[in-house]
Image 1 (cartoon, rainbow, N blue to C red):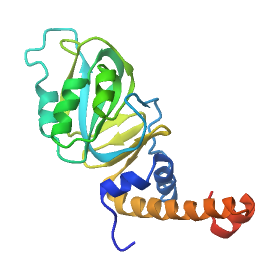
Image 2: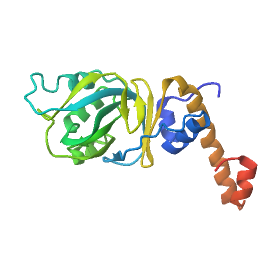
Image 3: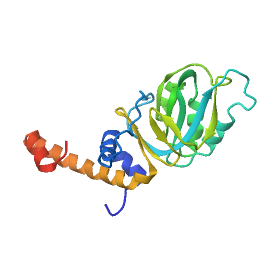
Image 4: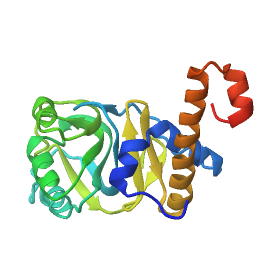
Length: 218
């Protein structure tokens, strides 16, 4: 490809499985998060650039409640995806309607939460994509807090750094490291085209084996 499409164009065409296949072809076979992060606020593809936050469980009165999480939200840029690495904790709902509203105003396109969220119906109503382990009614105040921003985090066996690309849908969450972004997206874009050609051939009557032999795509 002479140039890569914009992120908005990529959202229209790409999906997690084809990006995982592209990463496979580059020898990166473990870039899909291996914990169940489900799309709680709607279907579709979430694709954007990671902004990481690292969380910890606490059981004391936080002297600066919400300080770093608000800094993370206010620092969002267009096409960012907030990554909340909370080690799967269900102690509280660490992401909700107000954070979604503020992040969206800053251009953030969604959140991936390795933990629990709340205000699910309200986030769904405003169309803010959130992938998470589940829901919890409790506020994070004095239960959980952000302890670091923009530091590499581990979610489901995948190391995620701010600036990496993430693509998430009903099949899973896949992370593209910046160092292989161009090659991965180029390969994924080409495979989407090849899959469309193969699908059209099968619909026109070609057998699956013959289509695979001719186009090399399955």
